[in-house]
Length: 387
Image (cartoon, rainbow, N blue to C red; front, side):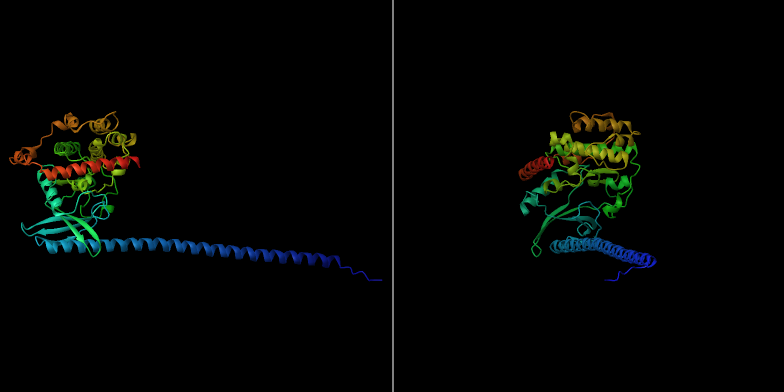
């Protein structure tokens, strides 16, 4: 007969308690180990994300440095074969176009400084980069001389065979006052574009809005009479101030296939969608608003909040309503007849050389160039509206 083994009740309780405590300890260690692993993994990810951001920023700076080096080299190549100009300074990125480079050069023939811009040829360009095209463009700009249009002094197409790149080089007068945008934001024209316009300003005095607005409209009338195509390059950054006078620049962009920073927004306007010839008026409305409010519109048409910001200029608000919120867009001539603009004295239009200036005729080659550019810009605006 087997002897039955019996455990003391007290010993059984102690034994059970010990097993439970051991299990709890093991579970606690496992839980601590899990949290330690998770924290370590999370920290590793944070470090990796920080490293990735730093690496991306470093790559961006490196790409920018190489881009400036290539542009500098192309500029020197041009100056080597054009001894008329000597390099003074490679400027900061003063414009919004990321691949455009700016240089101050000295024109030895007249002993004065000029502004030279260098931009890669656009894949949208439909004109040839040859001597005949260059002559046609220069003839065109000669015929576009006007008190409210900034002149183009020289143009050249540069081929960089070693890097398989082509550049468009433009020489214009050097102006230390900058653009209308610099005036609005009270910024220094030669600073980086990204640093100049971050803060809103108080806008311009009403009398200045009137005068500059009238000058811009006169330039638009002249361009329309000459058959220049509507485009999206009319903005405050492309309006140069010279002795307090507004002069339109950037006209070459419409010939060379470049798009503007504001084009995607302008093309969303229901007026532009209905009629691409209204593009210049819509752009003018944006310029008029920015002069008055001290900041850019971020939508195709001003909203109620935007209009509230210019409530102190009720006449401007009425004009913007006419441009943006009516069934049809007014013509430039319609705006010129408004009391707000038509009483402005235009002393620049009374100069003795002006009649001769207006008589400059467009050559057949220049007319053909305008026809090509008009068709391309119209087609491109149609494509942009569908996107």
